[in-house]
Length: 200
Image 1 (spheres, one colour):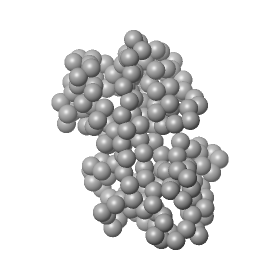
Image 2: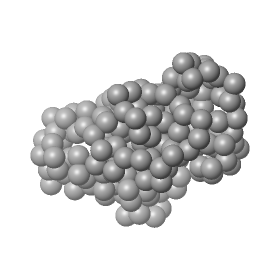
Image 3: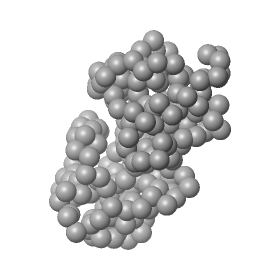
């Protein structure tokens, strides 16, 4: 069975991709970076989701000698010309401060009328092989931003994002409901098809 490294130490992402690969019947042994303590964090210096996911995937494939998968994702707000985008996790200045990021974003779109609060979550996932071969896929979920956070199941901007066709925020959905429509779920499912072909 081919060993594949997911370029993250986030156990939630590893569990999610394992589940998607199992559903797609892709027989790989997926492990995270916790198996490779010598591999440090890869700086996300790209200007697009695709550049960042490829940077991470190639760096981990080179360091591990194994096929590697990486993703980059964020929230793109129409009224902010697509921002925060690749800066979503550090929009307020410090990386991963979900509450500060969300509060700043709400303040920035405070004057935007309800009919113009469209946004989408985007995810780019990449597979890089030690040979240098690469594959990139994208996933999106479109929706609108509400004015007050609702729900506690999600993270990041989930409490203020209502997907098209829904009345609930993604933070009010179960993990399974969110997986079914999420940008990351769509990108990982598309990548699973490629992995089944390339790694068979």
